[in-house]
Image (cartoon, rainbow, N blue to C red; front, top):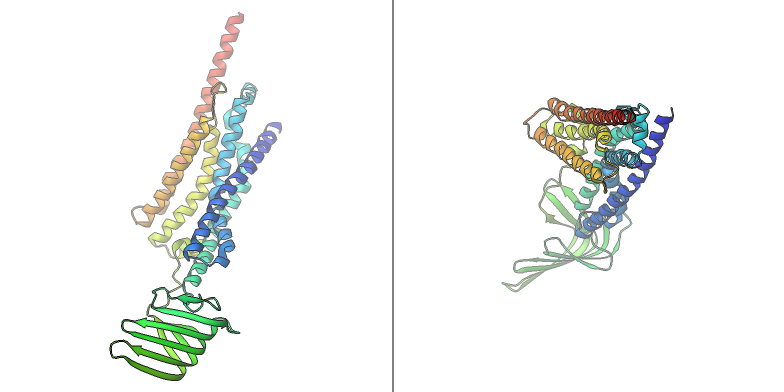
Length: 368
């Protein structure tokens, strides 16, 4: 049908252009944020591109929902301003007839949104958490670049290595200066590596010498060792098996229905259902007066988008706190949103038809 194909093509072009613009803006903001994390030492500089890709994939569902909503508002709003809507209305096509072409154009977006929210979102969060944890767990020795001095995180030790070893995590020709109150020690070793245990991190040095100087007694001690162990961090190794709810797959959330997991599932389902409701809401929100300057309907539509997704986040917080249950929350919030979108379409449709019929009767009365 000419009507369906025309509307779908218009929506597809607008959706593609809107997605490119939003993706460019969000990617620029995430690049700045990721570079800031790398500068603060939260992620490795070598992993900036990888973390940026994971963050972009995680934010893609929200960008798809927003792009689809804006595309519907912009496309139908242009039809109102160019009086195309008046032509369709005079031909007997009501506003409710736009629901079908909008849904037919948007169903691939809904499918992609579902896959991204239910499958990709927890996976990218898990990968990002593993990258950050692995970088945070790196030893003070692994932070040292060959040929450069590096202080430990608490400033009590200074490391120097001449070169990296043949194996990963092993350093050759290690120099270690340790300062504790009135005691200062200098340790040199042929090689060294870090071992993690329940008691903390231990620096293991092989074949070297250690000189200690006590400033109070002015005593010097010198020792030679084949293997020397030094506790460099008494914090136990973190438990990487305990993932946050956002990094747990959807089936895992269903198998372990805790309040926090149900809150995360509320957010995922809310984003999917919200994307569907917003595309319907955009049909009614796009109505505008061709004689009115500006595009205030788009601003009001974006305000509605912000309010809706703030309610989605609020529902997640309520479910996570155990105040409400997931099923009534989803039915209430998104059921009301769906009913409001359909009611807005009905009101716009009947108001438009009423005005058109009144104008037609006025014209016929004038001719009589």
